[in-house]
Image (cartoon, rainbow, N blue to C red; front, side):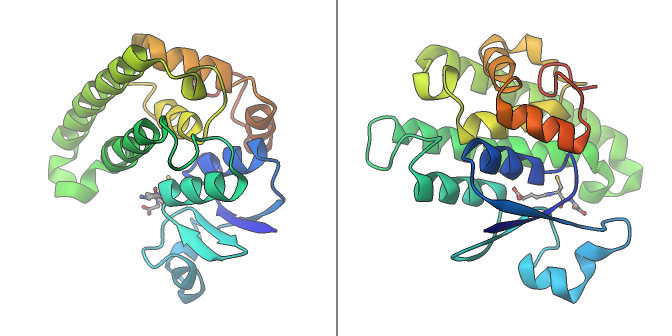
Length: 212
Ligand SMILES: N[C@@H](CCC(=O)N[C@@H](CS)C(=O)NCC(=O)O)C(=O)O
């Protein structure tokens, strides 16, 4: 049994989507974020930075979304090209591109004061939106050029990760501006996993392509 420390529509959604898609047994452990639960010693034991998500697994506690996704794909042999196979290199490249570049920019967009103080928040947010557009254009182009079936025609852990980040970026970066990515989002938002998560977290019908 996996235990996902969770708040709705957070990075925990990515992990939940993948747990659902893999049909792994899991429980949701709600985090009282407004009540300061992220700063408690008990939660810091799970996640030393006090971020969401943390996942309790049979192999111990994990944090960092990309690490969790990699682990879940490895233990199940699903939702990603297998280690050592030809498509694995692209999968790893795009996963780390997403985790190391796109995900932090989303955080800068939503918490612009954290990077350079409240007085610079507007400038940080504007720059984050521009950077997000540039990164999504690059990702869209790489995926359009390669068009790998494991990402474009099948559910994948990476596809769900990109889809959730694009959900959050939908205002400055409308998904339809990125056709190759939009196709992935369109397919993923009608999976049983996405519909289950959308209902559980009250996210609406078109959670990736037209979220708000
Ligand atoms: N690199 C981390 C980022 C996690 C992260 O920033 N999560 C957000 C929720 S989407 C969070 O914990 N925000 C609370 C805060 O920063 O105070 C990951 O991929 O898991």
